[in-house]
Length: 318
Image (cartoon, rainbow, N blue to C red; front, side, top):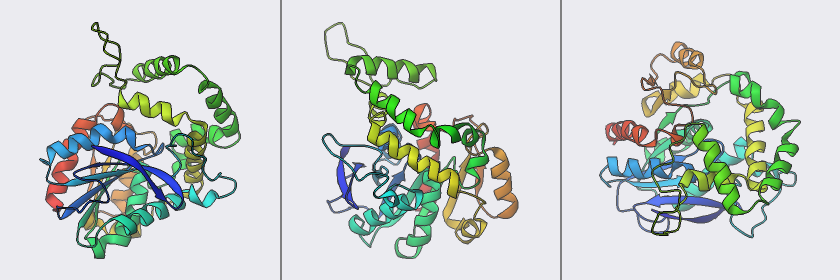
């Protein structure tokens, strides 16, 4: 796996790839692009991308593209949400992905988009744009396509995303002043207590004195706690709650033959009621209800299992 930062609309954006870096010729006819939810740090999807590449026997090139402003390189100051808010809204993130694709994706490849949570909403826009030119298809995992502010999570987080956002960012600034070893321990404990599986990499020192290897999800969460990154993630989330309203059934209907939608049974961002609403309005849509009990944030517990499922859909569409 290769990783680095790419300038998109003057915002350094973290990209991960398997099968070749973005400036290398694509030797396969199919390119998979993973679009994250929010927080949009692509590090959370590393295990999923690796597992998907293995499931597809290395026959597909896979890129993962983070959201603008959600992962900050060291010693970099980004445009502020006050000076250039259009870079960090939901529409701004759509334009960010379009700019990247138009700049880096050759015209002769078929595009497969994997969108998680709000990334699914972004991917519907990308299929609309690239279906004709790149035969685009999208696989929408735990998709937040409608009425986000009315969901249990949306109602709970509204105060944090609105009136108390600055307080949360101030708290992150204070936490970031802790020694890195303390912060690592705190984040690892917090994630483990929530059920995250952190055992893939050894996150404690070995008896031989080998330096500890911190699990990628812990490292990624520590990056999210950077005040600039957290501010842009919360700003985008606040915008999502304001702009993601009624289901755009027309778009789903128009592209239903190029979409797969995967809904959870206990998803507080996308209740089952929303899946049933989509099925009523677009009965031809391929809407699947997860039989495995995966959480909305599947990347914390079920990356490998989800990669196995998605790989079968990609093979069907290829």
